[in-house]
Amino acid sequence: MPAEALPELVHFTLPRGTQIAAYVGGPETGTPVVLLHGGGTDHALMSWRKTMPALVDAGYRVFAPNYPGYGASPPDDRITTTDDMIHLLEEMLDFWALPQAVLVGLSMGGAVALGYTLAHQERVKKLVLVGPYGIQDRVPYHFWSYLYLKVPGVLDFSWGLVRNSRSVARMMLNSIIRNPESRTDELLEEVLDAMKNPHSQRTFARWQHDEVRRDGVKTNYTERLHEITIPVLLVHGTHDTGVPLAYAERAASRLPNARLEVFENAGHWTQRDYPDRFNRLLLEFLAES
Image 1 (cartoon, one colour):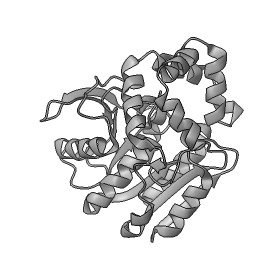
Image 2: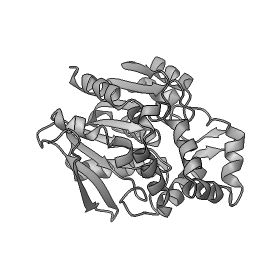
Image 3: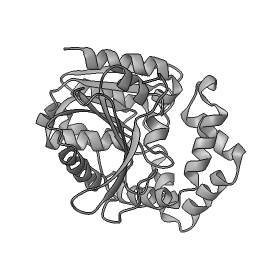
């Protein structure tokens, strides 16, 4: 497979009727690696465009699903919370007949990977968490974020502002990707195109409404991290404004078999900020016995 070739985008329907579009590729005998994207404007291709080819070239079997309502997956009103997505991940692993896999979770996908690992650790070979949600007590500017979600119309207005303004979209991109070389026009077009998907906006809004409570967040696995004994790699940027670095440092101290890699001058998307470094680190971690 050429260095930048992507796995095939396949569409399938799970037993409960949920329709999923996922990138699947690599040798069928390779160790399965499941890549879980974040929320908001994100989707599987945007998160893992630079990582999927590297994994396939190294001989891994790659599975990168789009959650319902994101990317090419149609929405499913039954799946909007973190717990819903954890159950969905279990259903997908059963559908793919994967008794064990490596899980790589970014942001919201990190919370899904953590929750699934706590419930089914025997089915997770290794765990990689990239700027993960699920390890923090509160979101940044928590009170104002809570009001932002509760005041009618504000969420729609902010999405419309980004969707209709290249300059505002670029400002948003600059806040999550700090490396100027990675803030390409191509990536900006990906973000603007993703903002046109009304399903992801509604699905993510429902997730946010469920997660952000007045006094903190609903999903916080900090007190259970000591239960995870498999190898864990945490990758975090020093300028991650979504999940501040201090939370990753606390998580690493509570995970018995964890390693924290901090990317200087990286934001929330370290895998797109410094893709070559991220891919080398990921492959090295996966190759360790």
